[in-house]
Amino acid sequence: MISISNHYGCMTLEQLRALCGVVEKGGFHAASVALFRSQSAISIAIKNLEQELGISLFDRGGYRPQLTPQGQVLYGKAKSILSRSEELSSIARHFAEGEETEVSIALGAIAPVENVLDVIKQVSEAAPATRMSLQIENMGGTLERLLEKDVDFAIAERFMPVPYTEEVRLTSTEMVSVISPDFPLATHYPAITVADLEQYVQVVVRDTSRNSPRQTAGVLEGAHQWLVNDFDMKKRMILSGAGWGRMPRHRVSEELDDGRLLELSGKELDPLKIDIYLFRRANEPMGPVGERLWKLLQQCQF
Image (cartoon, rainbow, N blue to C red):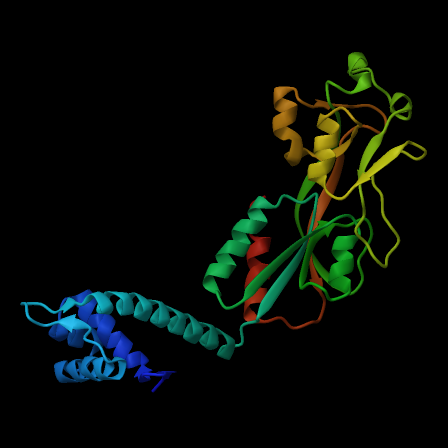
C-alpha cells in the first residue's frame, strides 16, 4: 500500500481514491461499486482519513454526503495527487516494457518539417514516458550529429555515400534562387545572370558541422557572402532586399505566389533538386519507440 506521510499522520492513495469516488459518484455505495470495494471499506477509509487530518471532509446531514469547505480544498489536492501517481505508474510500466527514456532526431533545415512533427506527435502520444528530442542542423551538421552518436536519427540531404548508416529516401525538395522586388537588380528581372549577381551579396546559411569539412551548395565562388544561422533569417534578409540566395521552395511558395519574391533562372540559377533521406546507424539495435518512429517516418506522405 502506497502512503503519503505528513505531520498529521499517514494518508494512503486508497483513502484518496475513496474520497474522490464518493464525491464523483455521489455517495458511498456508488463509490464502492466503482472502486470494486465494499461500502464499509469506503466508509472506513474516509473515516480514517478524517481522523488523520483532524477535520470533517463531508457534511452527512443530507440525503447525499456534501463536501465541507475544507473537504472541497482537499478534494482538489487529492485529484492532483492521484493524477500524478497514475502518471508515475504509467511511466514505470513503459520503462519496464523496454521503452527508451529519449529518442532524438537531427533534422536538416531544408527538409519539410510539418510531416515529421505529425509523426513525432503520434509516437509521443503512444509512448508518453519517452522524451522526444528534435534539433535543426544545416548541411553536414545533420549527419555529423548522427555519426557522432548525438542523435538516433537524421533526416538530411546526402551529397555522397554515408558509411556505417542505413538510409531510406523520403522525399525531395527544390532549392530556388530568389530575390525581392526591392533588390537593386530587380529592375532587370528576369534578365539577371550569375555575372550580374557576383557584384551583390549572397545570403548563405552556415554549415553547423563542428568536426567535418564545411559544405556548400549553390554558393557562387568569389561573391560577397553574408552568413546566417538559419533559413528564417535568410528569408527575412532576402525579403528586405539586402541580398539574394537559394531557398527551399516549400519555404517560399507563398511569397513566390504573391510576388514578394521573384524566382531567378538561367545558368547556375535554375532550381536544384535535392533528395532527402532518413538515416540511422547500421547494425545498432534500437528500442521499441525508435523502431516505431523509423517505420512511421518511412510511411510519411511528404
